[in-house]
Length: 84
Image 1 (cartoon, rainbow, N blue to C red):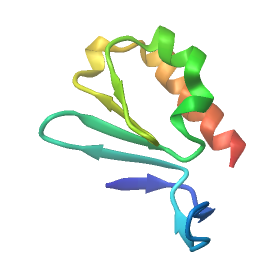
Image 2 (cartoon, one colour; image 1 turned 90 degrees about the horizontal axis):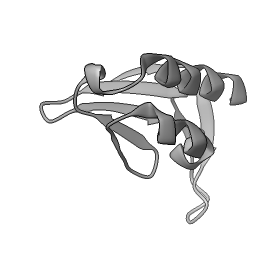
Image 3 (cartoon, rainbow, N blue to C red; image 1 turned 90 degrees about the vertical axis):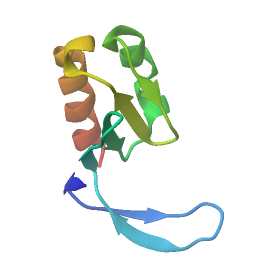
Image 4 (cartoon, rainbow, N blue to C red; image 1 turned 180 degrees about the vertical axis):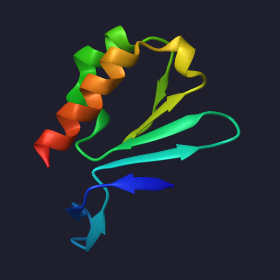
């Protein structure tokens, strides 16, 4: 996993605090995983325009970059980094 930026995250269930990345990228065998610290739900409108993808709680899964709109993806990353 490759991470960019730093954010102090506090678990709402346990109260435990950890340092976590603002944006993370992990190339996996099945897909490309993008970790977005502000959460996927914050990008609900952009996800409708993104193209073929799947989501997890804080992850965006893309099979091939050719299947998504790179401008929309770039905007999502830029917006996430600004929200720290």
